[in-house]
Length: 200
Ligand SMILES: N[C@@H](CCC(=O)N[C@@H](CS)C(=O)NCC(=O)O)C(=O)O
Image (tube, rainbow, N blue to C red; front, side):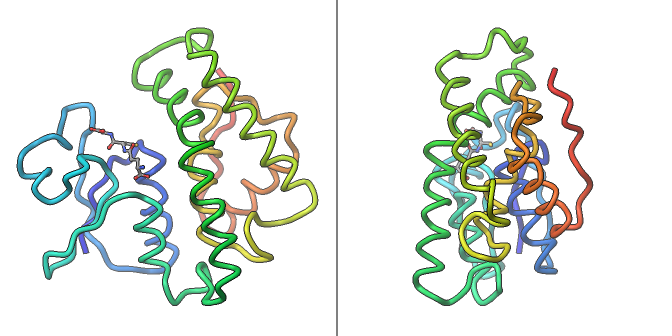
């Protein structure tokens, strides 16, 4: 399996974290989104949506969209239990992440990290919705260990990818003990080092 990704992208990190956790064999194909490498004819022939992450198998099958990829790769593992209700609760968070979390947390991070904007120059409406998303997670995580079920699942991986980097988008998690403790739990489960949580 080839994984096409940009290492700085949280959406791509989801796939790498999952694949490493599951011990899957893959070749990482670096794609630099700042150089238009998702817009070349060759790339678009494989992945018409023109985004990373994406995966390609030897038999020619291709798949894009981080959460669809996670769902596919995690099938049969304890990160995506067979139980229909558990899967529905996981999907609830996967859809929420794409509509109510990533467009704010990830885009504010993009504006600061890629576009070099100072914290104050982020789009205010995205900041407000990002803060709202983190608050919602805090409310959920104040008395539970994991987001979707009683165990670590792909919902946690999907949400932690950008949540642990939220400081790079100017978000301050220090007053959110539920979220910060959950981030540590996820990082421990994934066997990765803590992202430095300095809010610039
Ligand atoms: N909904 C997509 C979002 C993917 C996405 O926004 N990818 C960005 C990098 S994080 C990208 O490929 N940007 C380059 C481009 O659009 O040309 C997913 O979850 O995979």
